[in-house]
Image (cartoon, rainbow, N blue to C red; front, side, top):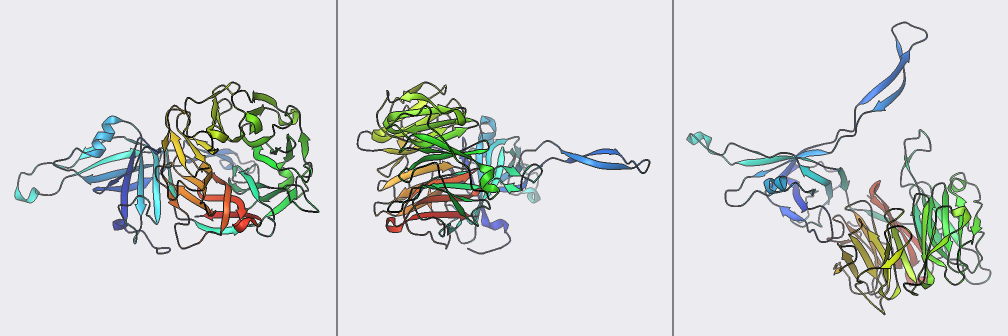
Length: 501
């Protein structure tokens, strides 16, 4: 792989994903297509003016308005074949969305979807027209190949590059890192500090055993992993273990599964360099049914926990209410994912999968891919129908019908060890945490919503040796950035890594 090399037109190839990225939608290599003239209109700028108080016929700019954001566009062009139906004409007539991938590279396999130096991805693409060259000849000089082309319009366009990996926070992480959250917003500095939306990272660690012991820590970075610091969760006892961390408005919220409660502190305290003031709220939690993991949408937080319990709150300062009291299952619930304030899925031990469609009433799914003896450790949803679950048997399964049926998705190394986490940064790019039976922690990446997976790192860099990564963090605001945390090699202490592209 070369570095800082200008792109040459001969080193690109086109792939199409009919219907858009999904675990059951493989990419097709289009050997006779090329992509021309990608463009994206971000909206023209209009000035807001007022008269100059010191000079007639002069005006002062007091502000500006950005016009409507356009859609990414490009043109697909290819050979019109005399004996095969046109792919782009068929897709244009069908009218359904297509994802278009332009892969770039010099020393890669051009026809391999997983091999590239860089990819330009157009999501939610529609074909807006179709054109063909002159298809006949009236004289010998008219003889030539016939091409076809179609202009495309996409929902989103972005680039994907191989990631460089590095261990982070080694000086402040002394215990296993259990969970994390990116708690940030994109800002140009108008109302808050400038940020790309993925710079403020908050992780929670296990309490320190031995004597003397210390409470769990919040380990955090405010500059996208360049520098790190830590603060005790001083409202937790030294023997307590956290049960998930989420961002709710201006607060960080952390569950405690040992002594069931939630603990919250102002995010701004961390940003301002203060010692965060935590508040403990145990109202509504049931002894012995502590929260294991948490998810949030807006002001609503859902905790899944021991004994099949699920808690919900719209006001963290007032406590929680029990949404599911272990009636459907008494198995521990290991993960929960919310699409909205009303639709969520929770997964747990012995193959338990349950969902709510109104935010209150829970039910078991019609089927589950595994049963007694296999625990489901993680769940991720694209929409109400397409979900992934990962298991303690090292396998990954998906459903495209809301849990009515399941299909195993094979990935490199699947079937051994455990799948600890799966998270997606939008509708194409995602990251998978898997540990081999050794154990050895691994991270894989997908650019087609899990239809295919590749082990990281993709380039010459290496990944620090670990026993496992308990979680991965990513964001649609930067699809080439991921943070993972877990247990260091041979279970000695915690570990944090970051991949950047």
